[in-house]
Length: 81
Image (cartoon, rainbow, N blue to C red; front, side, top):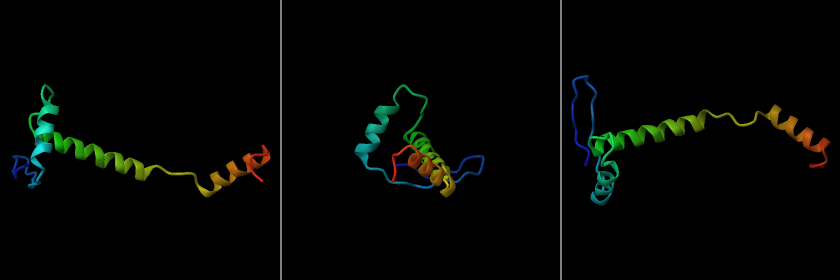
């Protein structure tokens, strides 16, 4: 379980419940790494997941104009009717 703590830099923390078997797996996974606690590892993983999600949302798919250009080129090459 991640516990509530107040740090000197006034960051506030909250409590999150994690199943005990998962905590045990995380403890084994972080052995010999720079992570000093399950909390620090879980925080790192969550930040990475959120950052990747933000990147995915920021990725722009083809604009309608780009899509039409690709379709025109494929038609010219005989791939589309």
